[in-house]
Length: 333
Ligand code: CP
Ligand code: NVA
Image 1 (tube, rainbow, N blue to C red):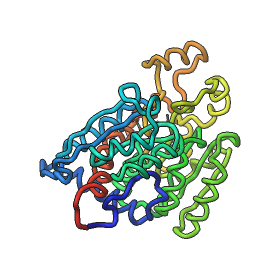
Image 2 (cartoon, protein in one colour):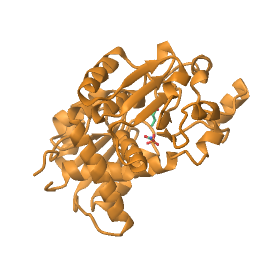
Image 3 (cartoon, rainbow, N blue to C red):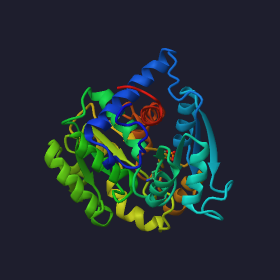
């Protein structure tokens, strides 16, 4: 047994900072094992359900590869392929899936859905992103930060842009729990929910993390070890791009703001997908309508030496592997 055994991974606040840092280090260990071709089939013979209400590249791929590497069989269940949410309740679906599968990943809209799956399935449930939180992303992100700076406590991560979304909220809470200083640069209407900020501030007082939320982008980035941004419109949001662009353009990560950190070694992070050129359908539309080459991050920064976005994307896989192995594998720590 270990303290993770049988637990679900629904949100960061269900764990201690030490437990989150353990998972970060375990993820690094599993990444090293894979690089050396050392088998780690901690879920041998298990079956894993991958339930998706929203689209995904990284999370779906990471769960699929991680499950295979751990010796488990992953099964993708898209929302249009199964009865879930249409003809069958979340609770009934949870009971059925839990009677066959050993673990369930869920990505979708409401946090209450992933909580209900955990309540009724009887197996570990892993949150692959909801409107509220993106906890598996956090293990990968802070693993990336730790790899670059050797430590987490005392480093400073600045998040710029839409700070009222799942990723920003998760970064704020997780950073506070790990003793990482979190600076947020965002306009007043897109700053974190008051309840999340209040919780993070209370935690920060116990860990020594410093929280700064400001409308002043230059002040937010000062002394940052990492700059982080996310899309300006999240999946499931029905908002006018024009409005968001007007609000968030001053918070675009560009060379000017990167230099304004005052540190040559600042890394640039993004959970991806990113809007940094015209190569996507939405990109083309936005480019034609608003005459912009990029939204939340400029292409020169995205492609720069300081950008670690693809390393971060890769780290989703060992991070998810660590979460699954710790909660569903029969490991002794
Ligand atoms: N970062 C992330 O969750 O990517 P996907 O939406 O592609 O899974
Ligand atoms: N905030 C983004 C994150 C995507 C990984 C969204 O929810 O669409």
